[in-house]
Length: 364
Image (cartoon, rainbow, N blue to C red; front, side, top):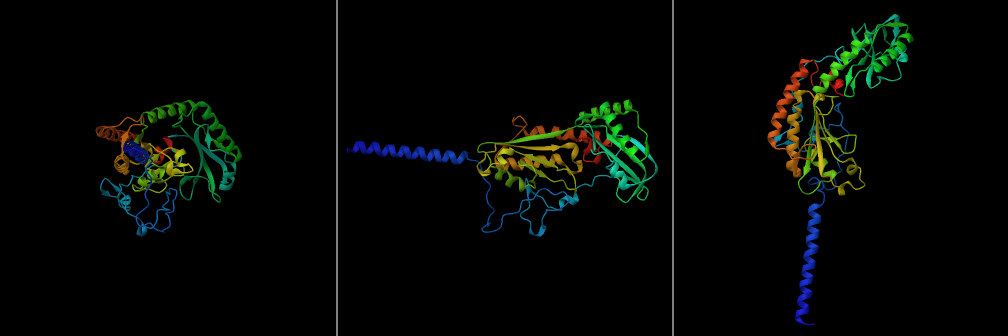
């Protein structure tokens, strides 16, 4: 074999090795980023994943908690939630004439709570609107859902005037009347129904106000280069305080108060989350959303959304976009913040403050 042939073979081998190396490097570069195990993990047991608990359960022992999450260099102390502005006293969470059509019911004699519960309609809706019956507790001097062992003389039935499915209509009002009359007949009582046309008109006006002041913000975080694995997304979101939700591909940032809706929601492809090998699944974008009416303004939810979005973009090499995937310049955020303050003021003026029980019912 001549030197020339040996040279060609050697050159071909070098070219082949270069091609293989380039393909391996390209595959590695474009592979979904994976979650990294904590330093010093060794043989330690993996952390137990828990569903979000709004009653304080599952928050863990602060003495054994891991490193605190950071938002753009600012440490987040778990005790900061205590220092958040306390929402003003709100209207009670039961039936309210502000957003409900209410029919008083007077019984001919006292009715036990057990009998009232047995006479309740099988469903708690009239069409697409929530329906409820309350009894007046003489001992507590307040309206409440009938309780076993209690006795009531006065009741009231109510149907919500509007929600995100629209305004109460004549058919739904008629269903409300039928269910209330059936309950009243069962306990030997007399209902006093409001005028249907007046209540339907109130419902339309309330629905118009709600439609004009309903805000649900959503921003997309898109990968600049390599995609992310679901575990990588969860790991980076967990550092910022988000916890796994009950639905695959959904994480939430809990509000500071017990029993309240989450402050922020992060969602990504549910099929990738449920994959047999999630670490091999590719997620190229995630959605970070805020339901404005569901969160009290004292929580500063939009500020938290901006902090979380900026931190995730920096940590995951992503870019902030609108829902259509168009990159958003930083200057667009300030006008949104100003508009939200005006929205909060308008809701306050209508006694439907964001995050209040009535607002959560109306905007649902």
